[in-house]
Image (cartoon, rainbow, N blue to C red; front, side):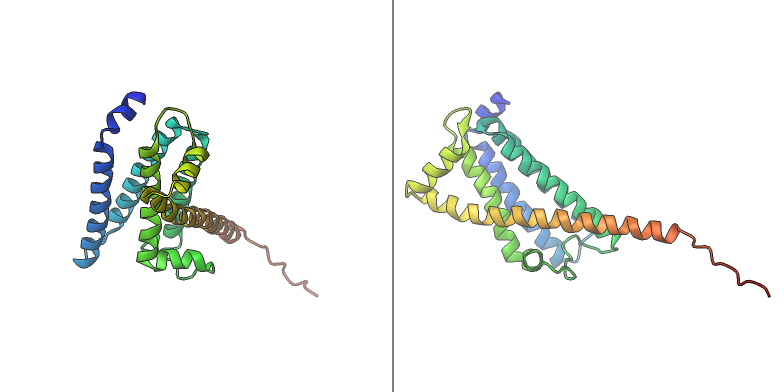
Length: 207
């Protein structure tokens, strides 16, 4: 892991991540523009997004203390999206972004407004990349780096500030998404068990 970190600090990592951002946006736009949207494409898009985020979080967990913060964020990201995708198929929906029937306004705003969702997603990844670039030594204290980067008054401070806001919204949406999707799965199981139960009907007494 240390060798990987040293290799990536030469800027290649940031370049590759930037290219992946551009390609992720372009392929989604092209799919909708030319009516090439598919279930496989939606699943593949989510899987590749989760993998790229996982790589960032695992690397950050190795160079920051406490590393468990980033591993917890990774667990939340995977769990919430897995449950959301699974609950989508249980409801017979085409896309996991179809949350029009949700009662949570933030959840609906996130998936209902592509620009808002794009800002939160990009802000989250930009924050992780910025934290990666701010690392000076192994075992940096996360809070110390955040405080110094925000208070120094440089352009990086503005970038971190804007990114933290979008990142916080995305984590909150992940929690809401995980809870909502888990409830759907539980209700699905309850309904299945209810349908399987045969209630005997007593026969009328003959006189």
